[in-house]
Length: 286
Image 1 (cartoon, rainbow, N blue to C red):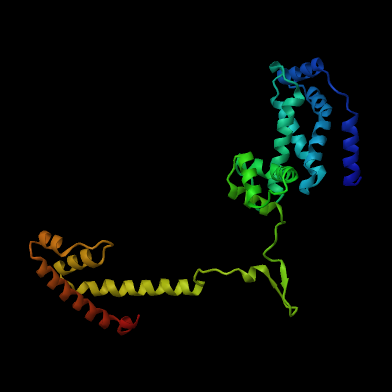
Image 2: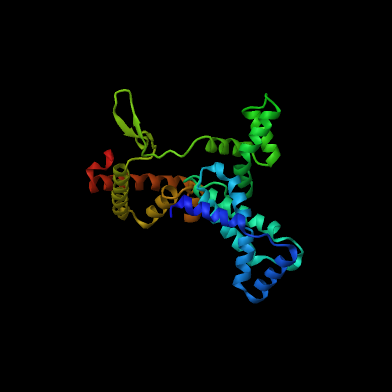
């Protein structure tokens, strides 16, 4: 049996299933809730499969398989039957409609595009209502287009205009693979990915920079060994910190004048330079 034949058989069976009156529906729901009667569950869901099919037909314009939509709706129907409370005096069809619709909408959002969308309730409402609202507003006023149309839809659904514009662009064109071939005037073919430009450095440049930093750090560590304790402290606090200490604050800490601190710093820098050149003659050009 082919998929189309199986789908038609399922639809015919659903349409032939007898309706349930309120009392029978209530009795079956009680049997399921109190005794987990599988036969009662089956009768409830079978009688309402036509509701699933009708709902699936409303979502057929999203380009997904009708059979898949019916299967997802059936999952929602089963969830509704398992959670239904017969004592609330609400017909099962009213309660199940929400679960069926939610199940189908979640399926559509997962499979309509490889890019995940509709992650919030506002975006979900925008996804499923944008086309309908745009058609309705366009019929009512020929002057609504572009920004004015987005503004009207934004006001109706309570979402930012930027979200409306972004969703409209997504719905107006299918996903395009980065590996899709592009053919130029000369007949040569290349992928879309070849035209993506990144401002990040190349991998060999990143590795080279990391090696250079490590080498310079080693030179500096060795050169610092030629300084005495006071010189090392002044260099560390003045040159090796993000916010270097002032000459005056260091002078107060060390009990010397700020001029003396400047002199010691100058002498230490000369000693460092000599040590670094001795450590690696290439330092000055590095």
